[in-house]
Length: 506
Picture 1 (cartoon, one colour):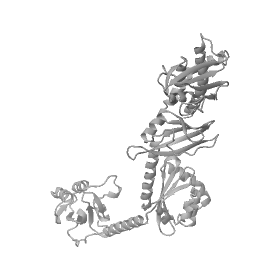
Picture 2: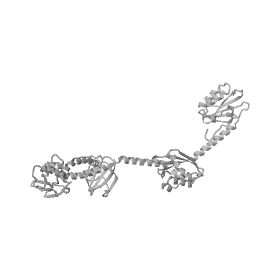
Picture 3: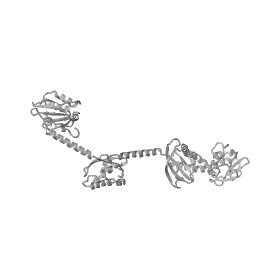
Picture 4: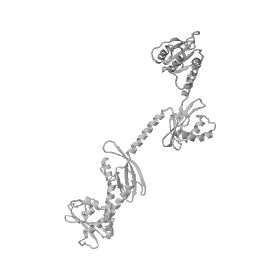
């Protein structure tokens, strides 16, 4: 954009300089081979009749950059001469007038009404061969810079001190057409003009003519000697991305607001930048304290004062270790369980976020811990009850995996399922039983009974160990599709075991 600024300013200056010098060059060509009326001045003449050009000096085609001027009206002539004569009227003069050039000394434009038309005479004092040569040398560069500015892909325009557009490129004209703005001389944007010597960037929107589409632009304004230059850059993609990000953040905020897990996000400077309502409920920290964006150390200090974290043995050294905690969180390997004095249990997890930020998740797992402890207690109670029975008892799940066995079973079959590397299945168990018993057809029946899901009823069968000892094997279904297998001595039959139930339904 700055390159366009220099090109546009250079083009503006070049127009003024080259126009003046081009006049000298053109007039010089016109006077070669003939004597001017005043030996000290160069003149070019243009005749108009009925508001149209009927004749002119040959050099004036260079001034207007046209192959021929015949038939032109006053407006293009006024525009061509306006750089040096800005006071020309909007209509062709009907009286004798003389205008002095604002670019060259001793250069005038004279209008003389004739009986049936108007005579325009441009006269000036030659300024030396060097000036004429430089005008010819700069003309190609001027054409190149002018073409660059006019064909720039972004809108560029110049405004005078009164806020009127006095020059613009093709992109600006196309922008006005798209917006249905039929007065290019009036800027379609409401721009606050910068002070002289200052620069300003303004974000503005413009509604397209077709539909309700709104286009966004960032306009850079620069003050110049005679007004301001403005450069517009389309930022539709940037605005759409910002809106999408804003909507995404709002969605996340609504989600976080209903999340039962406390969330605290610290930026790369370790300042709190985001938290949700659950954090207030779990930490009992004041809202005004969290809204003030405390740093990480202050956050944990207040949690310690509120007795919402375990009291460390040496808090000073623990504060020093907080930086290790942050490093662990950034590597996604920080997770601790806090047993609070109030009896609650919190799970603290650290997660890395982009740009060096860190998020801490605080979750109340008191109910989960309580349930786990209760379930573990019930399992221990069930195991102790089973160990009290003199008969060997083994319980298999509906998938055929051994889930319970008592001490009598482990002693009877000389096995320890708890120390096994893999799960013990009904197939593994029956193989062990079969190896220590005399041949019997019941082993396959036990496997099918445990693994086949259908209406089942208890049954029993006598088996004989390899040492001649006899046992009664009782197979009966229990809750949740499990199966219990008991081994009793026939000499002292056992009473029916009550159905073992736990509060978990197993």
